[in-house]
Length: 108
Image 1 (tube, one colour):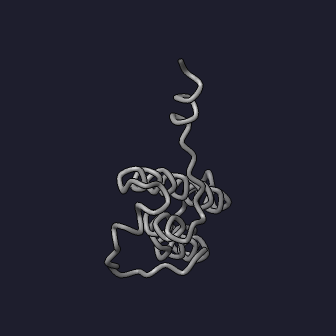
Image 2 (tube, rainbow, N blue to C red):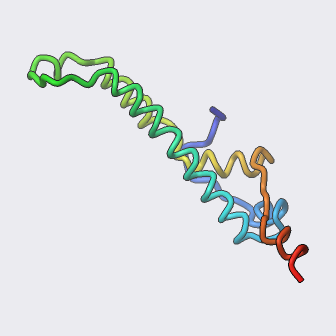
């Protein structure tokens, strides 16, 4: 993952409009990318935590499962998906495709 600042960062709105020509379209793209990142992270976390799933929940296992706690803490410390999506977008790592423009050219 990229190094993302954990504190609040002031952004220049013109930077967001460079790729798409429209700030609102850029925010929409960033939002969709953040959702993709969020789903991916959630799937990763769930798959790692599924290894610890047991049918019997006794008190000793709950307190002794430090590995599961460490995995959860790791994911809690990761930057938010929105921050990751903004960084990817500003670095030009996000491909922007506009299917409406392609269909407008074809229609009569």
